[in-house]
Image 1 (cartoon, rainbow, N blue to C red):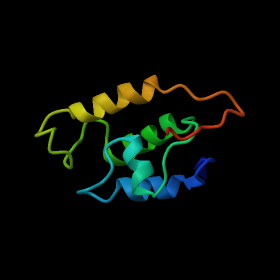
Image 2 (cartoon, helix red, strand yellow; image 1 turned 30 degrees about the horizontal axis):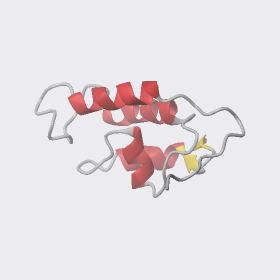
Image 3 (cartoon, one colour; image 1 turned 120 degrees about the vertical axis):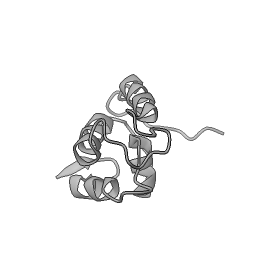
Length: 98
């Protein structure tokens, strides 16, 4: 199933990138980076986060050194940032900053 239409990312690709163990992405931005792209409209960010939570586990963090046996603070920060992302209106083009 295609999760990100802008980058043509599939659910299988996202699951595979999150299942790598050490070095696995810990935020939606890291998933894009891991798969060689960047977020465009942001509509898929919540779906990617849901897939990450299924694969990695919402509170299980054996990968992130920040966690050290507790709920991952870095993941909580990433969730807050992802919640703040508002999708651009349809037809809006992103322009690179100069």
